[in-house]
View (cartoon, rainbow, N blue to C red):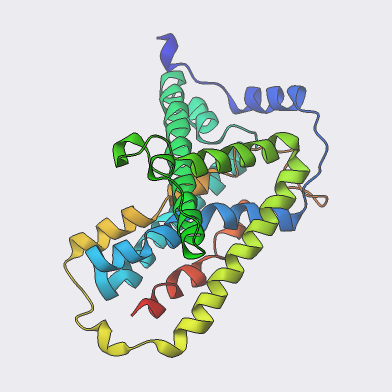
Length: 271
């Protein structure tokens, strides 16, 4: 049947070569920042406290390790597929070449849904921080403008505004958006390092006991905190010529180990 037809790798690479005439405009630092920024997402800032209080407790570190291992395996799979089919398209292209058109269609729309949900969660998390920060200086936004209808409000205006701003940055151009992302990732890592530096001397190991609740909360916390499969797929939809460095193509899997130590140490100062 036609819906199960596949496309040969040679045809995919030929189409990519014919259609893409992009200038190599991103260097290795920008590519590393893109990978790290995708992996260290909203979950680590927004949901860590909720996960520690309601689910895993001191075993939160094990939840991070489990989700980190899953993310690492996903990254290795994407790296292998990218090496086999070095063209744009991410999982859609890989599914089209191996499983068929209908599977690729399903995978493509699932990716759209994943990016939509993940971006919405990040925007809502940012909105919560902005609202709390303004409240700390005496500026209180109307509840109807900082909550969705499901949360008793009218619209989450800060979340919409940050989404529009980030979309505008992306539209301006690849170079500008990559540099902006590099700055944001730098600030994000700085915040994590400051938190670890200030929190480490105040760690009370007495709170680490009992350290291991049932396995179900630990695994549930990993799902709660991690957008990692989506994050692992993020770099690959980029056009290969656009995301190639001046010294050739960059191995995306090299970004994966960078956030791991920060992820694993992040929960420790909470207890």
